[in-house]
Image 1: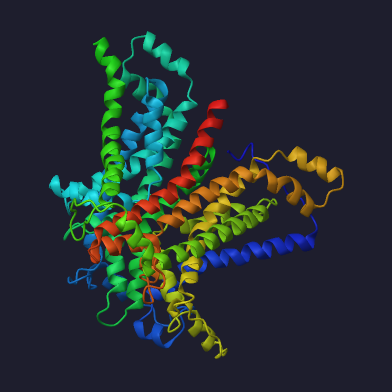
Image 2: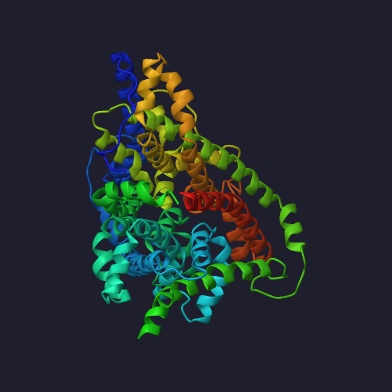
Length: 294
Length: 290
């Protein structure tokens, strides 16, 4: 759905109604921004200003100390390391997992639309259904198999788990996208003697940018925000950001440092927010155009 | 060379398919098998028939989890759909600044439920959050401690989840509305139909496929809901906000009742599949006819 063919359905032109519409829309702008505002404002306050004061107020004294503490010195579990090592863990898990699930998703989509074979419908159906399983159903055997493979508590193990949870969606996205790509071009290239990978690289890949953006954002957001797999399968030294943030916020010992919690929450949200701000427009457009419809 | 070319596509597909086959379908079968065994702290293979399922449905915690899922699911899906449609209709009235408003409605979906949970946990906390704000404003009798109240805590999960997901539902409806042919609307306007009537009688009925997609997306998110509950309430106060996902985790990994945990995971899967499979089936069928 591109802007040029879109059409709105404006029905009313009375000034009163329009003013009311704008007022309601503005109220909801505040509603969606409020929690973000609360997090940002309070992450710059000294702790006593939060406890004795008002969560809605701007800081009277601005301080960067909560940020420094959340990043490099706050107590997470037993270690006073801050969130930094966990942030790095998340990057080390998510970057390869996103890369692998996007590359294989693209190749799978290519095969399932342009090199069809007997039984490909069943393969696709199984991959599609795998997108929606509640992950609780795989937790017990996954723990056992990762242990058996010697991957329990390792980055590789988490990458494998994320790949298995993400490949269904990647395949779905690319399959739907490539289904609309003219098969005649592929046939012609085949007659000219182009190989399987040449056709993919020279013909399909150059026009795949929109769906690559959708897939990368989808996988990045889901994997960065994952908590269940991180909580179940990470070990000492491989714990991801979301699990560390939850440990920070819900640790029962000591004083509750709300300002540090808020700074930590923003740190955990920053990568996905950045991706969303930079490329979110393309994501929504691509998702709505192709991926939601079967 | 030719033979290789012939087998290459299948070889390329094979690793992904193998991973799915093992990590999804074999794992489902294994969990299904465990749900009929006497597994406790570790998997064990003594066959006990349906004993875990009978035990499961006799457990107070599981029944709390199901009731909470029902409350959460109905409100979450209902409010997100109504709010999403409402905001989409408003945004569809040639709004100046739509490009500014839309991303603000949408950004919560980029956040982790752990982040959302952290923000709302302190925001709803009666000690430092919104109750305190109203007290500072002079409304000292204002009272809002749902997050600490066993009977109301589940509604705070709804509040936070709606905040996170409603913008995304809005975007789905907006895309649907933009697909409506506005010749029909113009014709209806010429016939003298009021705007409210045009929406009620023409446009909203045309949104049925979007309602269905939104329902499927939200329903499966609701059944899977885990992170938000952990971050917001930790399943408490007491076990008042237990949901199937938190139940499965605690029975399997901390209470050493793996058989019961596995049976609860199977029930969750049956719930998700009973929504997803008919939907995918009808989508794929209509896709083939197109």
